[in-house]
Image (cartoon, rainbow, N blue to C red; front, side, top):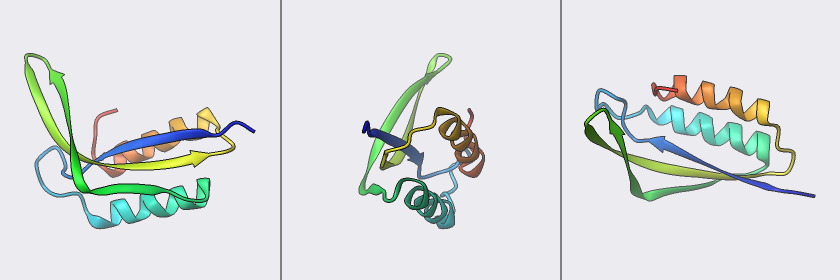
Length: 92
């Protein structure tokens, strides 16, 4: 049986700089436990992500949710990505 490790980088703040509501993370944790049977959350020391937006380099603090999916379905994960983008007010 093939197992897929999925890492999800979730921003600690919304694009306007306000903190993400705690229930966004709680709901995501519950969904991943339900779907994958468990999740590991790396939240003690937030990671920093950097990307280019036009001529500007933008930084973001993130936490990482990691799950092992034994029944990986690409369509489910694509739909879940869309839900997370909406939940965390991020661009797709």
